[in-house]
Amino acid sequence: MFCVIDNRESGSFANKIDRVLDAVFKVIGLPTPQTYHKKFLLIMQPNAFDVNTPDKVKKEVFNVLETFLASTNDTTEAFVRKVGKNDSFIYTHEVRTFVEEQRITKKR
Image (cartoon, rainbow, N blue to C red; front, side, top):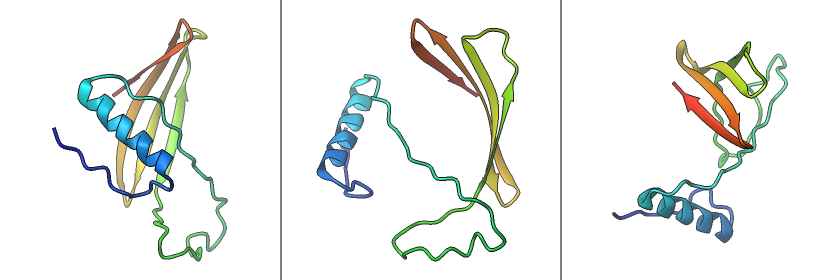
């Protein structure tokens, strides 16, 4: 197996090391550590999509709709997520169950 870990979006050497570890864990079949993503919610205004961003920043506009489903107990969360743009959407059904302080996620 051969993996190339390039310098895309690394930001720092520590981030690149984390990406190397993720790749190694996937190859040997170990679970990868949880990663965290920063997301920003922009308030919609009349010309919200005309934001002046630097050329290096990738800008993509898409719609996300999450519908939370009623649960039968306190240890289960379920929802349907609709993600897409240009009249093309992907639907995902996700169920999260908490067992002994661990979160188990099933997606369809």
